[in-house]
Length: 482
Ligand code: BG6
Image (cartoon, rainbow, N blue to C red; front, side, top):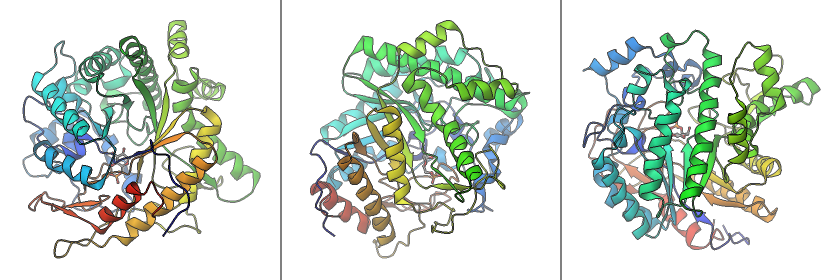
């Protein structure tokens, strides 16, 4: 199809990944264990229901030890798609695809294996020197996430994760090491991936073990307060180092539609969305919104926000808003609660095997809402369609993926026409990788197929899918050939 609108020539067309889903080599070159290493592949996985079980959040000190000692189960994120060994080949493929930007994360436990050391692991730093140089030499802008769901395990067992203010010191030290080492070459930094999923990801995002908390909700918000302070400290340090560096907040978009036009449904959906905006409100506007302070008061959630914290937050707001968008959700005020895991069906939308709806207009809605609210540059840090591809004779005919991405790119163009400063579009997993939510390899997003199954069996070889040649044309034509 032809599209008359050409994206700006400086627009970042990229791809996005995370260390724990691609690298593997979990015990190589001094890397310590992290939360991602104990996500076991569930042989009885129910794809439609996994989100409601939130199994990872049930981890205790005992289940952690059991996973570390387990010799039977398969833990896919320990092995990823083999990027640690194949990064040159993968970056060459992304160059051939035409990407001008690449988002990846640094594995915290490669740099600080336990998390509380004073000195970093040189072998870890050298690996990312090689990756960053390779990315830049391939003509791509590196976009780096500092922490993407892989907290060094020692910080959970020893300190109780982010609810402990000691983590402010540890993560800030880690961030300073990264900025000192790579700040000359990396402009865009995202300290925290999908910072708002505290209920879904209290284990892998906040490091909370169930046996270490008496008041889970309070500890989740205490942990997020510490993460807000870390963001502000990172921003302050980055600016003192190099004014070129930009620090962003990243949200998992939670677009909620009211099930009907009943005012109760409208207000309920607004309240649920507002609870999600909160995670960007503080880092981008520099203060806690009143409705959250009221919520804390009325729900026995005690957060210690000092005067010093308030000025740190106010004086160090972040530079851009990154967000991931996969699907929209629908809410019924009668049936759903404030718990983000509860949603209702949307009769107007189709969904994939995992129940994720296909809704490009939801992306247009999200971009527009964020722009109106914050007026900060917007990076679409993830978007994509998970599908169990059929691989035969070295090819994958993934017209469903092309269709999904085409529709989403079109609405990004619509937002740019509206005058929104959206400067990057980074589809998730340009080369197939391990799923974050289910640890499956067979939930694929890539333009490049990786010959590995859910148990890590296969050659690991890479093959270009039909979507590879399609996205190549989209980028080369600045979005005019879709
Ligand atoms: C986001 C994460 O939640 O969505 C990624 O930042 C993740 O890490 C992606 O892979 C897709 O989710 P899933 O569960 O399909 O891998």
